[in-house]
Image (cartoon, rainbow over all chains, first blue to last red; front, side, top):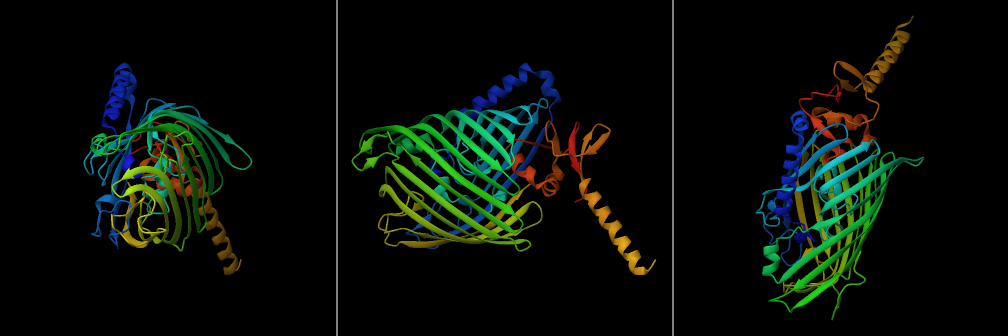
Length: 385
Length: 88
């Protein structure tokens, strides 16, 4: 749910203060630090073809640049061989949290402690590693598609957390095995002002989880399981309700990129078995997402196809009734490598829903819409610098 | 020696040159010392301009991916131990 992926400026100020304190207590080390930087971006125009059914991010059928574009900057500095600081600042076109469109916010900012080549510990704001590409989900240059299909990316209600994570790598006969654990307090990506005006107050807490990754020559397989407390308080203008439960999240996927063949696939599931029950079922009852991508490189060109399906039973009351449903999408596209640091992508996405206004949460279905399929075009470029 | 044999020797030597050049393309610069990069990234910065070259030379390291995850640092004015690659 893109609506949840908003920032929290207060936490950023707190982290910045912490880093300042660290700088004050280690003045000698700070003077020796060099700051390195690099960046990335995605500039895309999108156009939905039918106003009665549109992919997430559209509000009408006019050409839309803002919702599909962003610029990011990575900053890093090391105190010594074991200890470094890193932060990623992103300016998203789509309005985020309390920030206006294209305001810069810290997507992550953490201390990275690597006591040995095989162990790393992150402390601070970091990305929730729910998916194969969670660590660089906004770096389109590293993705074979324009973006991770929203029905999979959006199943998890937040993208970041304040906390700690640790990972250890082992060499095996099959490949490099990485085991990781993480925990902390999820950061809402939603504007608290906007949600309170709509009568909703979201709360997520007590995230804990683990991930396992196996890397081979040109391939990766990965699985993740986590659990967190999810709460939703509904108030005026909605009927008063307090809903809560422990949400379980599970994902498994692979990527293969070797020679001319590229393939990614992932399945994700979120459910709240002990969630508060409403008349219609449980709050965040269950959400499922799946995608499969196949591509083949012909020199600088890579034609690709992505199948994605998302279904959800969230029981969140929206402007158009309850947001439960299913969406299937077929996306065909072509990537063209523009030198070593940029790739142009053009794609057409066709969305299908079982009956009018019964698509998943991740498509826009205005009240009164009567159609069950519609498409959208996107064209643009992903780059790093 | 016939011209054909000379051509074969030339091609062989050229191939050896290319191979050796490719393997020595990335080096660890440590003060005034240089050594071939063996794939160990511990405690090393990476020359910003060599990122894509490193990724091509050592695809299994996923250098660009790790850089954008915040695990590795790049430097444009390196002052200590770092990795540099020759070539484009």
